[in-house]
Image 1 (tube, rainbow, N blue to C red):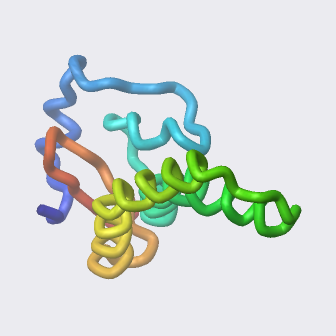
Image 2 (cartoon, helix red, strand yellow; image 1 turned 180 degrees about the vertical axis):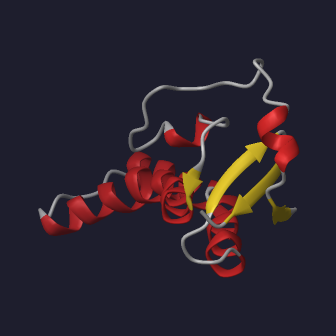
Length: 114
């Protein structure tokens, strides 16, 4: 459920939630205590699909390398498994206003306009 960020989120930060000091291509999804811009969150949802499914197959097509059946199956399984990520990216992109900042609190995601 997505709703507006209220003051209780800032007042009740739990020290139990994970916090990674860095953010790179795949680790940004584990950062639950920081405020993420909307586009960064959508990119983090789509990164596994792009990096593990589409880029290897695209590289094989561009460099005219025969795709091994094992690689094709792994890419297909990852693409199917990324279905929920694609749905989350679509919901985030379509229902949250542009320029908003997102924050997770447990299983709830809150957003606010900076």
